Amino acid sequence: MALFSSLSEKFNHIFSKLTKRGRLTELEIKEAMREVRIALLEADVNYMVAKDFVKNVSEKAVGDEVLKSLTPAQQVIKIVRDELTELMSSNHQKLVISPAPPTIIMMCGLQGAGKTTMCAKLGAHLKKSGKKPLLVACDIYRPAAISQLQVVGKQANVEVFERGTQNPVKTAKQAIEHAKKQGFDVVILDTAGRLHINEELMNELKNIKKEVSPTEILLVIDAMTGQDAVTVAESFNKDLDVTGFILTKLDGDTRGGAALSVKAITGKPIKFTGVGEKIGDIEPFYPDRIASRILGMGDVLSLIEKAQEAVTEEEAKKLEKKIRENSFTFEDYLVQMENMKKMGSLQDILQMIPGVGSKLKNVQIDEKEIAVNKCIIQSMTPEERRNPEIIKASRRQRIAKGSGTSVQQVNNLLRQFEQSKEMMKMFKNKKGFRF
Ligand SMILES: Nc1nc2c(ncn2[C@@H]2O[C@H](COP(=O)(O)OP(=O)(O)OP(=O)(O)O)[C@@H](O)[C@H]2O)c(=O)[nH]1
Ligand SMILES: [Mg+2]
View: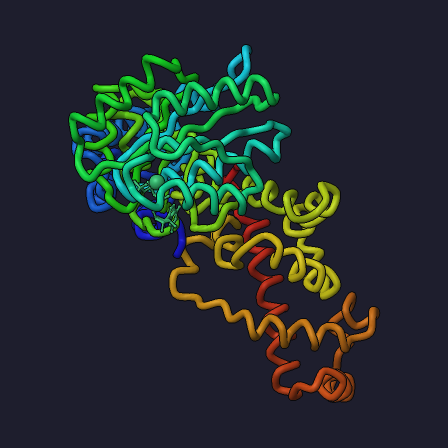
């Protein structure tokens, strides 16, 4: 499911109407802004946030610069994008690393929000950047909580510290001592969940906070709960003065209400997002990239970063260049299919390509078909891979035979390849969009 796809689709609709019109009148902009407000409310964005947002955008959009411009729609889209970015941004966006190690991160949140999973994801993420994290089991109430942390810790290849059901404050303190002695530079505390905001458990969190002075207190909230997540965020923040949020299950959230509202309501930033159940499904939160994705401008930066994780930097740059230059051959196609497998689901990746996101809603990507295509490409000669236009009837027959497929399947692949090249050309020519 595409991230924020429903909101993205509505924005796309609103702005494509504007684009068709050429020069805009104040009235047309006002009408578009009314639609933007409705789209935001339907995305479950907080009422006040939506209202202020539209007010800010409108003030900027009905200025002379836009009205007199030759590309007013693009200007309006840019204003919306900047304002969306602003809405989610903070000067404290990045995870704070304590100058005196260990950095102590306390995770908290309601039951099932994704704390335990996120401890492991964050551990793995920090490990990649050269840190040595330690996970600490401070949830002593749910019977399987400790073993769950051990399981995900193992998947993430991060050590877990536990002292059974002894008082979690004591466990946290001992873990910090252990970290100092053993050279762990980040300590991540997995605390107990609560069904509702409950005074007893809240006092426990306050106690841990007082005793260990965490560098970061991160509240884990479930994106799929929309405005409820924002209410939870407000209330935890009031009691604990959290330093930021982690928005999980964004993979299941097509609306984006929590992502768009929480910073505006609480003043605290979202620092990370959870985008799936696997250990690698964590992304630092970059407001500008999210804004671009919402507006269907794709997220080329995240795409490149993902590619860099799976392939060398050089290869990733080549890919980006080829997409931009439209000089993509079947050889690249083959290499990319291998890389994409390492990068995760195709749908996630395609969604980051500008202009593709909102069009993808109903496209089903068939991994089996990809395997077939791979066989076909492997049956091509290097010359054919580079110059598919030379693949005429007799070559098609030979390729089909060599790959154990039919001529029709070969034709399909050739047609698909042509189509994707056409699509890439379209992005290239889409002037006025900058990212
Ligand atoms: N799709 C998806 N599922 C997630 C994500 N994060 C966590 N989950 C799932 O959500 C469920 C609850 O996750 P936990 O990490 O156990 O949540 P918790 O906050 O520790 O729960 P308690 O300890 O019971 O309070 C698990 O099934 C996770 O696999 C995410 O980003 N996307
Ligand atoms: Mg848990």
